[in-house]
Image 1 (cartoon, rainbow, N blue to C red):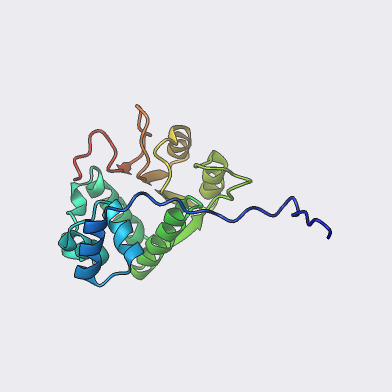
Image 2 (cartoon, rainbow, N blue to C red):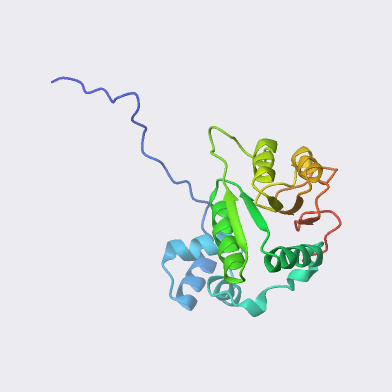
Length: 201
């Protein structure tokens, strides 16, 4: 019999490594919420081991959210965005290429358009552009008349790019959740709960 050799591009099947299950909690959650065992195990391992907590996580309500104005700079960001929408300024949404960046672009673009604003977007190519904001995108935006850039899921470490935007007369609102460096970008507003001076719970 001939031996079969796997092609070099074929990878072995992925293997899931699950943390040890805390059986009593998993079973209790599984019964209380009528869940599959794996779903209950994932919730327990993520510290949603009480049925009430797990239920509120699985079926969230808007009333459970904190006041967005607890985020530092939210008032400045809202005021600037309202002005841009009212005056129909060209707005550029600058996202990240991953799922939270692209989903944020879609939500924000749709909301701005519903309110009567005009928004375009830029999502960098993962391989060609890499991660983060780039000055050449800001230069092109200035040429097309953009006066407001809103970053989503990026920008907290884009000090040079934000400085370039200011040179060109473009306001920048940074919305990001990544950890900032010691010096924040000189943006009009920075919405990031990880800012050391932000008390958002």
